[in-house]
Image 1: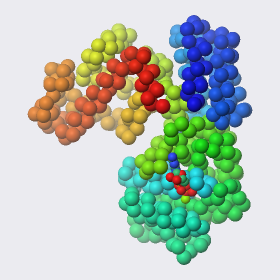
Image 2 (image 1 turned 45 degrees about the vertical axis):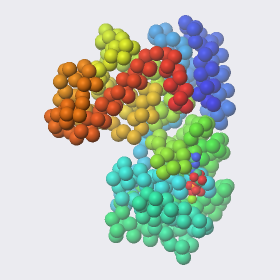
Image 3 (image 1 turned 90 degrees about the horizontal axis):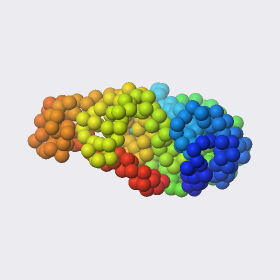
Image 4 (image 1 turned 180 degrees about the horizontal axis):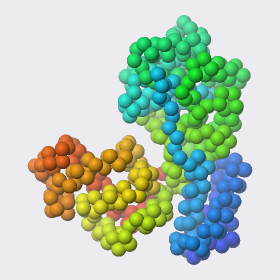
Length: 437
Ligand code: GDP
Ligand code: MG
């Protein structure tokens, strides 16, 4: 797969002290081949490696990191850039917010409609209404009803009506008078791009004026995905892309090319058939995935700006000896807060991206954690295993939290400690990364 190929490409540079035109060219030739094999189109791959090369040569003198680290970092930056840089949200705000699905049959529209309804309901506290506008296949209506039932989300359908425009309009009227604040319109697709399908989806879009039109595409279709995206975008000018079936070993090439071709951001990725197999798309995490590692280099760099060298060394030693305690944890939180966007930082730590996936972190989230740690005695902070049931109760009361919150924090701390210890050993880190793939 692509990450292994990148790995191999970078091996060329391992052990070499300096970046030269020659060793970079050799490595980047491998990188380019890997990209092409992962369905990235030729032009994109070529531009990519050219940019990386220019950057690498230019930055060579300024840095002390090893060439392979530097090149990894630059590749990472460029991959992020290629995928649009920042994450972009879907717009579901409105009265109601209206989200329209488009895409070929089998791309995963109905499945994603369900996932999105689930996400809106549980993560955004919205009250979504699913709308079945696939008028050609009765089974498609059933499929949506089954999902709706499973998720506890109402499904609007009308088996007598054959005009998707009318169904969608009726659904919106229904949503307005029944307190639904997001309407998700699932539509029909065909196996290949055709005029009638395009006209139909365009008509629906025109009639209901969605707050967000999404194009759903199967990542496994590789270069075809890119062509389909272009055809749909030319016709309906969608707002964002949903990349489905990005589970397991799927090549991520389409993700790299789509943004360049249609200039629309990928917003979510589907990673399985189950209703919770949905990830918010972060270019930086996708780049991690493609490079097969967390962005260790930039983490180190960012950290160096903030950390007192000596403190860092002391901490490293503690981590290596597995003596990292809650005081250190607390200090780390302060440092992390100083560094800015917490979620992005967490995403850079191998393994963390995954562990933190369901946790919505913002600076406020730290307040609870800080209060809990502050309610502990120094002895407890130094030796968290001391914290038994009655101590937990005291800490919970003292910090104005529930015992579950204290438990959660201790669990997080233990996991962090374990991971940091593992990461302090290079061999462990490699095996951890392998597990993550
Ligand atoms: P639609 O025709 O566009 O509505 O596509 P469906 O939602 O019916 O999905 C087609 C098939 O792809 C179904 O068997 C889904 O279970 C499957 N599917 C959809 N999304 C994903 C995904 O992210 N991963 C995997 N593995 N399968 C998916
Ligand atoms: Mg469907």
